[in-house]
View (cartoon, rainbow, N blue to C red):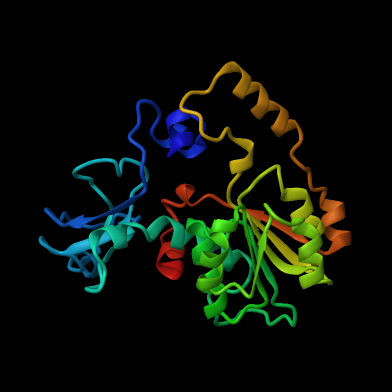
Length: 278
């Protein structure tokens, strides 16, 4: 949301422009239900009858969630289970869908038809954060392990352990990569990295053969704790961009490793992905 406000979020600039109301996650009560048509213009009666006025729903909207009312395609909504409040339901969509698609790119979801590798180790940066916490729990459900979670402060260690991490590395107290090499000497099958410039190269270097580095964010490239971007912040960001690692296709082939990146806000037209992953 901060990067949207700064004007640095690519899909926000491309699809909405400025001014813009940020926000992806929504939960609320259906006030009106319109007709639904497929991408080919045909009537989609089955999905039209899925929701009715008064239903409690949650889901995602491509920006604009900071609103009292939103107009959302039905494909982006699900009914709220009775055990969840509006607040709990609204905390789930963006982080859980991001985690689920990341695991899909890693080759672990859907379960049917996935390739079975003997190495199922996974390292998850920011394991106590929103997407990280979902990745930890989903990885355990999928039978991956060891699940190594990385946190940035001691206060988050217990939270990461309670989510299911087999190992938690507190990088504020120990060297992240030295500890990672001790826990998984042969390299990780999967590394989930939304840090950006601060860890991307080392994440790649610590993959095993056939390993996959999944990239879905660059928060270390951005200023932290700043309400406004000063000229100095722009200079710092530019310097970090110059320092970003480059992955040569020939090296990827020789190393037998993969680097995959994504941003779900570009998936508006990928209905098959939404139905499969969601």
